[in-house]
Image (spheres, rainbow, N blue to C red):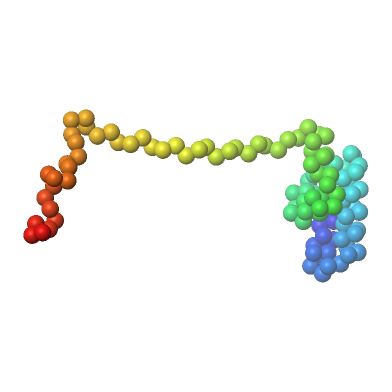
Length: 104
C-alpha cells in the first residue's frame, strides 16, 4: 500500500492512487482489520490519504475508546518578584547627585 502511495506521489499515477485507496478503504471499513489500518496510519502519506479521502482513522479510534492525550496549555508567565530593597535605604535624589557638567 505504501509503495502505491509513494508511486502516486512521485509520478502522479492515478491508477496507483486508486489501488492504494481501495486497499486502505478495505482495511478501514472492516472492523477485523482496524488494528492493521491504525498501524498503517503511522506513515504520513497514509495519514494524509485518510484525512483527505477516507476519514475513518479518528472514527475507528473513537469506537475503540482510544483518546488522544490532551495537550497541556502553556502556563502563563509569572513575573519574578522584585528584589525588595532595605527599608531604611532610599535612592539618592537628583539634588544629592553630583552634576556631570559642573561648569554649566
